[in-house]
Image (spheres, rainbow, N blue to C red):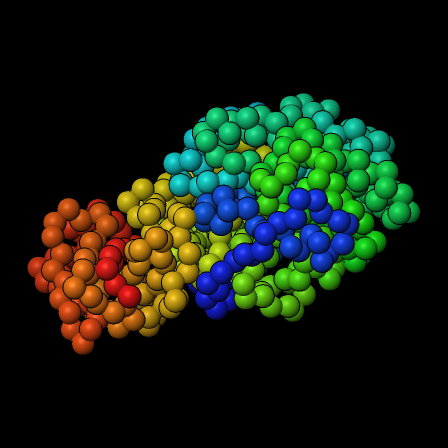
Length: 451
C-alpha cells in the first residue's frame, strides 16, 4: 500500500474566518476548512463520462485520459483504438454511445451510504470538456452537443445524483477541470476561454447544484493569477450562496498545490509538482480502487485494492489527519462494477462497527506505534487501531494508564482484561481469536482514562 505523507498535525486551520474575502491568497487562505469536512473522513469519488465508453488504458495509467493518449500514434491506446473503432472514428463520436441506460442515481446513493461515505464527488467535467449537466457553454464553445443533456443519455446526470445523494443525508460535491485539452477556444485564445467559457460555466454549475465540496483539477497550464482564481473564489465565498459550508481543494493554478486554497491534496500518496504537504493544513488522499480513476477494462483483479487494503488505507489516512476520497469508475451504462461494489460494502460493514474511531476524530499526539498500530482520538478517548490481530496480549507503549483506564474492543460484547504494566495498558486477549470479534481486517481498542 502506498505510504501517505504527513506527520501528525494537532491543529487544523484554527484561524477565525473574516466576514468577507478579498481576491488575494492572503485573505482566501485565512478561511478555515469547514468542520463538516474534517469530521467526514470518507468520500466517494466518481470518474464517469465519454471516456467510459472505450474504458481502456495501458495498465497502470488513467483510462479517463484516453483522448490524450490517442495522440501518441505509436502508443498502446491508439493501437487499441485503431483496431477496435477504426482510425477515422473520432473521440467525439463516443458521446452518442455514452447512454447511461442502466444508471440509477438512487441505487448509487444507497451504495455510497452503505459504504459509510459522508460525501460524494462526481466529475461534472473532465479534461475532455464533456459536461454531465446541461451546460450551454460546453455546446457553444465546442460547436456541437457536448453535454449529457443534449447527447448520449440526454439526462442531467449531475442533477439526478445530487438529489439522490442528498436524500441519503450525504453531502454532494463536484470535480471540475479548469482546462480542456482540445477545446477550440482554449487552443486559440486562452483569455477568451477563461472569460467567456470557464468563468460563466463554473458559476453556472455552482449556482445550479450548490456543491458542498469542489475538487478542481487541470490547473497546471497557467498560474492562478492568469486563471483569475482568487477573483473566482472571492465570488464563491461572498456571493454564490455557498458561504461557510463549501470545502475547496488546492488546485487553482500551477503554483497552488500544498500552497493555496482549502484542503490540500495527495493522489495515490503523491503530492503534485514535487511539493510537500504543509503541517497544520487539512488534506485529502485521492485514489481509486484500481490503478485508473475511469473504468479500465484492461485491468484485472491484481490492479484492485483488497478489502483489507482499503480499510487499512482509510485508517492510515485518518490517523495522519486526512480524509480519504475513494474513487469508483462506473461502466458507460451506469453500473458500478461488482468488484468495486464488493469493496465498498466490506468497508461499510467495518465502519458500522468501528466508525467511532474514524468519524469526527483528530490525530492523537502519536500517529502510530510500530507497523501495525495506528491511533486516532476524539473527546477524552484514544483509539488504538490494530491492523492485524495482536495475539494473546496487546502491549501499548504510548498511552499511559491511570486509575480510571478502561479498554473496550469494538465489535466484542465481552469484558476485556486490561492491566497496568510499566504505566502502560496491557490488554489480555488469551482465549480469544479474530473470528470471535464482529470486526475483521483491523481491530479497534477504545481507551478511556489514559494520558
